[in-house]
Length: 466
Image (tube, rainbow, N blue to C red; front, side):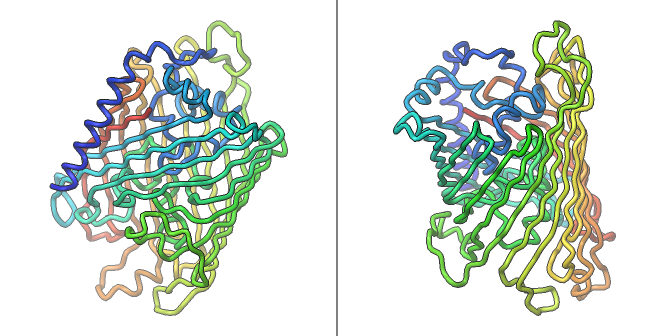
């Protein structure tokens, strides 16, 4: 009951803000493209919502990589009020997700849950305030509440991406510095690994399932230092772009055993001998393949071709972990490969387009990695209904192989092998600031057990951003 009251307070707050923004809807900043081309839900990828940052890809690519469906320029949705604040040196943001989900059959029992996540923050532009060229201070906070439906379905891939660190917490506090037209970038301060690594546009706020909640579930289960909302770490990060279509980035992050303690609310600033380190690197390729023009009237080079993004990454964590047999492992390492490609766009109706995405993670140390192999992918279609060209339909799959070393420790004769989830979802874009998303998830072998009852999860997600 307490969580439900908290949820309704947040919803009322969001609705009040929407009312205040209605008069400014017609005052969106001018741009060469129709602002309606960029749906609200896709803007949520790389702000500090879900600790996925809008600067994950360079701004140039935000405008032409998945221009209609799977990427957008955050400045396109600034109202007159926000623009005035930005002119003073600050860009505020607010994001909200709420998931109402239930399992009408399957699992150990039937339940209905409400999960929610509220993120607020601001980017403080130091160049406008102090003449500090290329400098930005980012600060954000989160507030989350809810319960896990996995307690009823028994699966590893949580059905709700809104389920997060269940408290008010610090999300991020870091300095970002760019050089050479943003071809070189540095960050220092407190942020999470999920904010800068192992994420595709399709893995942001689109799926309701938490299987790829910004980054794959396997990275959260296999690493002690892989975090997102409300669990920032001391970190240093660097990114360079050797060519117009490639990037290389690396980071070192603190592994703090107290990050999961809600009593610290993400504000544990100390460093001590118990802490470990997480080393990350990622190489990316952002090609744009030649193809027919998106628009009938061919006026802009960015309106042509089929953009994509491909990445490969590796990690090494220096922090003691208890193996499934009770012994200790001091180092954990692994790899990931991911990609996303726009493969078709309707010439006469440019907002209609089709994209494929997918990836795999691999953690060789089965004695400590619960999900040594995880695969995921899907298909996205924007504008399936011609009169609803801003809506997005999707069909995704998630599969995880359970460690044999973990299964061997089970006292029962049944051994976990593999869990699979199929998700079908449709985003209804109600306004520039609001969306609702009906969702179906079919969970096969929950927890990896062939004898476990498959479970159907039904519900919807509401989202808002300002």
